[in-house]
Image 1: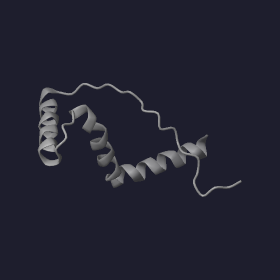
Image 2 (image 1 turned 60 degrees about the vertical axis):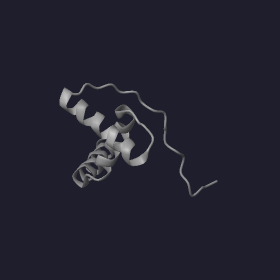
Image 3 (image 1 turned 90 degrees about the horizontal axis):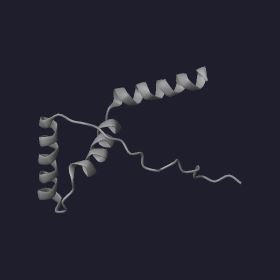
Length: 78
């Protein structure tokens, strides 16, 4: 049987940890506060970071082109 919807990809979250410099930590805390003032609910910076990264990557056309090429090369080499 063929369905219009392909099988969904693995959506299991992957835990990553990172360290940031104090200036970036401060900026992220400020962003979280401005987010709270704008939208109401309080969100911790670590909750906002994945959405921020996703938004950044989805709007970076150079990254999208290079990523497509990277995966195309991997398919032809593998």
